[in-house]
Image 1: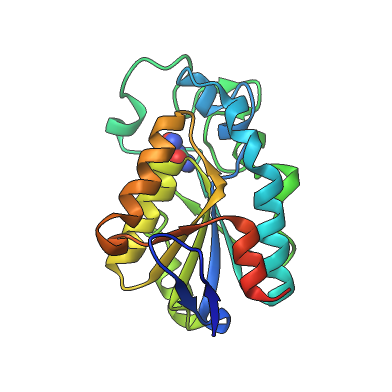
Image 2: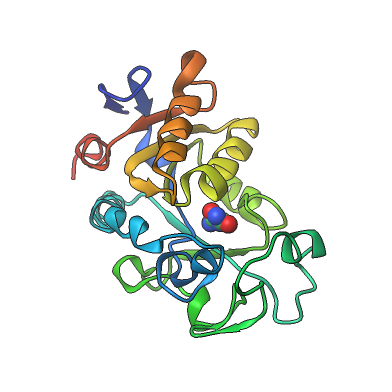
Length: 222
Ligand code: C5J
């Protein structure tokens, strides 16, 4: 067993052999100009601050043999998996499926949908394309985790209060112990990130725990 004594709201005990890291949507479409995040009017440069901690977390998990599952929010080229309610909401500069500087916005196979080079998956690591905000919706994630015998999930990625929090809540309801890595997740809205961390660990870890990447890597003993 491993322990992160300083995790919040209290110490987090986990078995690394029954743990996986889920890295949510570290894609060019969210992290670079000209993609989905920018089309919604966000300052995407804010997200880049987490790249070093996320890369260190991934390296630590690789060294410890903790499986890493990367996700990408994207849709089929014919948009058959994109509900009109998602595509037509609001007044973005470019909608899902429109042509932008990194290819069609949020479409599988386009350059913008790819994971940024700094945290790119190694050959053999699982990459899950997901049409929703939560990674359990309309994907094989549940059966993948069951096959791996995973009981505990570590979370990193973007954005904290949208796809990361949605997936963490889905996982919590499915019986996983969940920990969000504080400096390996980011939002376009710093106040939303802070509020999400508080919501997760409030009421006796009602959704889960939080801790910095260095504490996770130290607990893994690598
Ligand atoms: C959003 C995500 N923010 N990956 N997606 O639309 O959080």
